[in-house]
Image 1 (cartoon, rainbow, N blue to C red):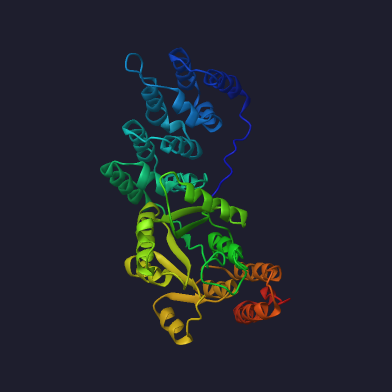
Image 2 (cartoon, rainbow, N blue to C red; image 1 turned 180 degrees about the vertical axis):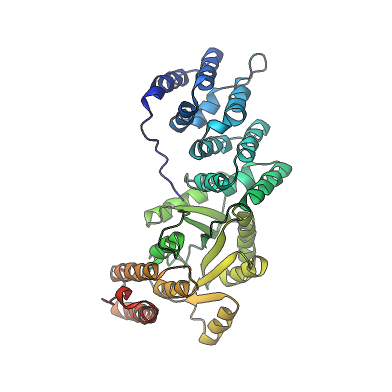
Length: 414
């Protein structure tokens, strides 16, 4: 998920303080500059302090203010000020900005204790908002990265996860987190030769958006899509960032990525087990949500979905599998009995989601309309390649229209 984190223009009373802090950070920041920055922040009102943290480059600020072998421990004093003394003055966006700054670079004991104070000092629905805000900042420095990689202290991690679990008991979102594969699910890129390579499947973007919106008349909280992929991650997050950039180029602007492992690339079951490990970790981060997974039939996703249902039946609301290997109808029916629903087009997926009340009729119709428009623009190399796919879309549209009220039925137009 990517949220616009460009700060609004600061309120006028903050400008002199903001300008002075930025000037003192502009070149070498000595102990006198650090002391003055601390004085400005400590003397700010609650509204001003919250605004300052939203306007400042917090990563640079934390890098400029130091602890010294001989002399004042100004970095410790800064973190104590922001995460202990004045944490109650900070709204969720400022807390998210501060937590994000703390997780970049080396996360040592000082940073981990500051993160501990932020999390334990955040309660109820604000915990959910803080998690989504961190996942919404873009890049690989997301919530999963923070908890399972940046925080090294196992006992601290468990303490924070237990806090998240306790606070989730008071928060019932009634919403789902969308998990999705990429290759042959989001776009044709592995076994699916029916569409031109790298084609984003018609309707998939709208399907994600409508699942995120929910079935009710009012949209739910935006949560974006989390891509659970077999692509191996790396310590610097280069794979995740490149994947996010590729998704954004193809229209999926709101996303996070749970990457695979080089040691789990051989065999569909080992790929699925790594995805399962990521899912179980992710589920602990968002216990107040249900989960929907969208995958394909070409690379272990059926097994992954079955294992999700086996280990978290109360949380997993649906498994949708894009069929790219022509699974026989009898096998499809057997899988559906077990909770795994195969589909050929995203119009068909919308029909399944409508039946499960994960989409409302209006949302299902919008998926179909988007799919028809996108299909018309797919550059098939030949009529022979296009025609079977066109007939699939029309077949699924007819089935969907049977389930829609007359005013919402979608004209074919292909």
